[in-house]
Length: 548
Image (cartoon, rainbow, N blue to C red; front, top):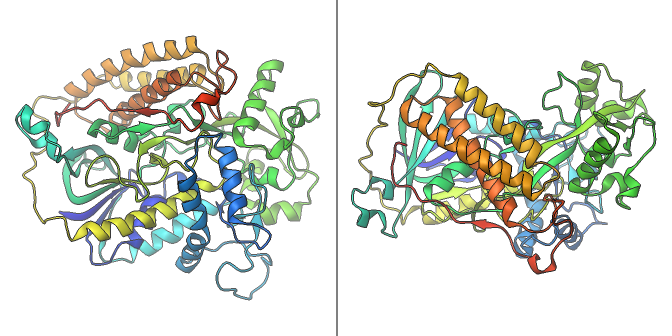
């Protein structure tokens, strides 16, 4: 029995764990190694108003503009105004942000002297970073602090199968319809010994990241399969804005360059997007050129690739000195060199790739979901901050702000939650067998990602969406049957979640009869002013069984 069960070990989950009172017994689950999540691979940085020439109002206005009319302004203001505090907390935790004088031995306290860069959608330099590996710096710093905490137990290579709720434990239909439903933990698979355990907790927190792995090409690590969104949905939580999947404009194009992102800060420092003949093209799509919001840049690249029948466009920052590139982008420079490209001498080929899930489980300002005892933070959620498109580097800010807000709310409610333990049945494997048809999982996984890329990608149509809907409904039936008859594995768990999230994305996209932000459809190419401020909310299919 734990006080708090945190499913996920990225910036949001670790911030929460470190912000909770050290008197609480906390468990953190990680699907793989603690650091193997999206936070670790984030390059750009974390946005906050830290310069005297900047202002909260400017950051708020930029975020609202990027969100294309669907941000919740009160949420944006709350997160933006907590930005400096969040950066200061990370600095005190030991995160080595880059300073203006990066070669100075002088230690400067607080946020003073931080080197700030500018990214797409921002009207000012307000992105604090640790060279071009900000996520790695944040993740490794927070992991080292968590490992030193005696009240926190870490469970690597543990993947949650499903949430456990009091309603699922009730025997009669009358009991199942009672309104006092509460999350009391999760069933969890240890992938190193294939044992399934029950993790019971007073509070459960989903911090599992996004779902970009639902697409064929993505900048995300393999674990981004939408687990938290799918588990929360099955437990009875609403989701919103799942049609808004952000495609990062610039991933390195190379047959062996899996998930290699080229940070937006390269364009922030003067990088230009070029066609194969060397001509630039972004100015004809948006007056902000390369610094337009990500949806515009990604769609512009996609347009040019399809128009010309080319495999990629090119990103050129060769006009900068090698010393500048090594100082600002040492990891990106090394990665490009690894694949045979020298940023200092030539443009590098780039393509868009699925990058960030702007929708998710609906939560309040404290990260509470519709289900008592269940919180969700980070990319798993819909908070109202991002609207129809996330502005660069607002995501890590959201992780820290909501991790701290959730910790305060859990601490406040902790004493009012009784110490009752529940008689939870063990995971039932009495009627299942080991599968001798693993090819089914591999085939379905590949098929989902391919038709999501082709039919529900950067540019959509009603016909493509209906084709995708037909395919996902059929595949979900196959997957449910497979799940009911064979022992669970990590691949099966992820496939089941991935398929559920794919259906949520498709359903949400079918509901939005307009083009807005990251959702662009040829059948409704214009934005509908009547849909301003109307977010796409889906009510869940409520399920009562524990197994199946």
